[in-house]
Image 1: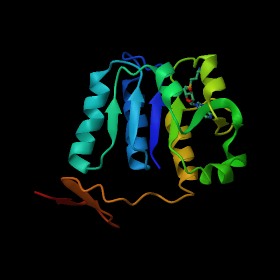
Image 2: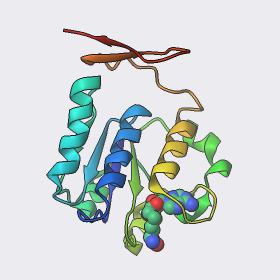
Image 3: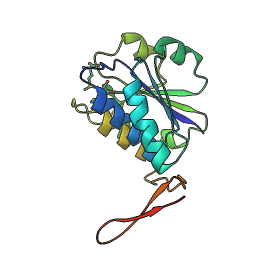
Length: 171
Ligand code: SAM
């Protein structure tokens, strides 16, 4: 199963850090890539730089047409929105999804069409908060609380440690 994120409405002046974190959370929590609707090279470069050092195959595509991406997605579309049905009531049906998943997160107001195209409009509480928090909890539920322990196979490998920082550098 492939999991991709569609990040909509990114404003280069104010959303760069949040969108970069959407990608980094996606990468670390088991997604395979992010589609970004804006043409922001800096976000792509920051995430690609982490992937180069810490490994993995996370992809970032910029300047993507959101409408076309939704139309052409052949798997399940999950839109994260504070107005949606509660994620906690849908966890078991999410874990039975076997086809590819596209997770949509917004920045500014999300067009109504996204609500119609999505198979699920899901909320993590019905309070306004953050796409980073909502995405991390959704990915955790999709994986049933199992943090993917895939071998990212990068130049830098962090060794879990009780005290201090242990890092291996591969040549
Ligand atoms: N004002 C925008 C609107 O009305 O669509 C939303 C802005 S919010 C800061 C950015 C994104 O965070 C949303 O598009 C949604 O993906 C996510 N988000 C915020 N609160 C959420 C919640 N309670 N549950 C799920 N996703 C949420």
